[in-house]
Image (cartoon, rainbow, N blue to C red; front, side, top):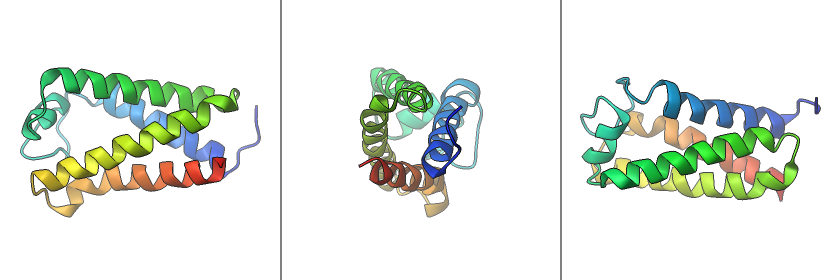
Amino acid sequence: MPEMNLDVLLQVILGLGLLNVWLVRTHRATTYRGGNAATLREEFAAYGLPTWFFYLVGALKLGCAVSLLVAIWVPQLLQPAVGLLVLLMLGALAMHVKVNDPPIKSLPAALMLLMSGTLLSLSL
């Protein structure tokens, strides 16, 4: 097992966090859902995004999650995965702004952006 340093810790937190949101909590209401959405799919609808975009973003985020975890042992996967995650989190924040969400609803996306940006800078 690789040494547990900041980059590996961030990879685990980000990877497991994404898997949790997209596989475990996708149908559960949370304080952080955009607009008045109760589920993740409803959140995309609240942003005015088509259903196919929900599936595309889900596939990209799940791919990032798996890649971040595998990158602990295959470091070549890290930069593409975390770079894409930075872009996805910027998009998530833009959607919260688009629907005039209160700042608290943007907190998870902002924290994911902060962690993924930190991880990206550590990997350069």
